Length: 297
Ligand code: GUN
Image (cartoon, rainbow, N blue to C red; front, side, top):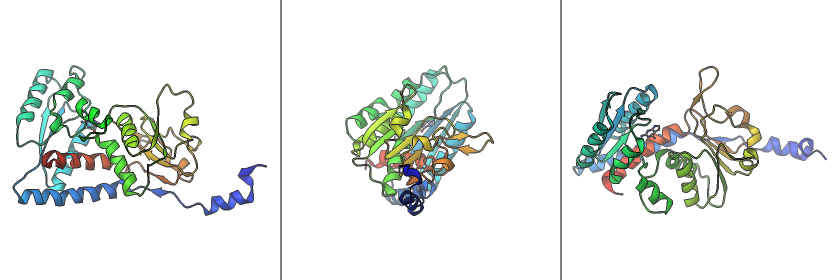
């Protein structure tokens, strides 16, 4: 019998609830408002919190990201220091600035916006940031701590995704979690965080043989591949939760994710939109890390 056309199946389809659209903008504002209250309390006790943001060169996307980070600091009542350095800045000059900020007691967090120009070794710069001020969670010490379940700063995008799931009452414990993408910033820390929450975790990447076969097992699918609308309904199990980390432009120049939202929205139980899903959470978690850096909570 063809199950797809059976009457029982039709009824089930009609009764199926609409997907929950996870509102990252709203949840990120909740988090920032909670932080704002905390920052106010600290201020009353004479504790000011400050993030130093360094940008080298004038990559337009980086300028937008850095601007948003400064705005978020102002929103929660934190100070920010902006270092806008020219493209020709040498590696030594940048390292000297990072070392100076490491020593500066007024600065609680240091963020060097990536990517850096090709003549600067990114790994070396990240390793030079004091782990105590590593609010991006990119330092090898922070990554190592995460991998063995010790406290430390966690990369903001994957930390934000865990927060999105928790605040949407989506349990991770025992779930089949599939992460597409293995970057140091998203895929790898995402897998570790899902594991920490007792998920059963699989990571797919460009060498994965049959990706659909893996993704169709996922109760929770996290997509971070950087290809516009790559994931359609054929990759997805009915009722899955889909988190889209992508930020791309479609053929009409409109912002879109790695997931074809329209194609999958009737098959999933919950999904993040682009924009307004994961993106705002990254900055909220950066603010969370800054407050943590200043208050050691
Ligand atoms: N470039 C793109 N995303 C990020 C981020 O989260 N932190 C930094 N420092 N650079 C980035």
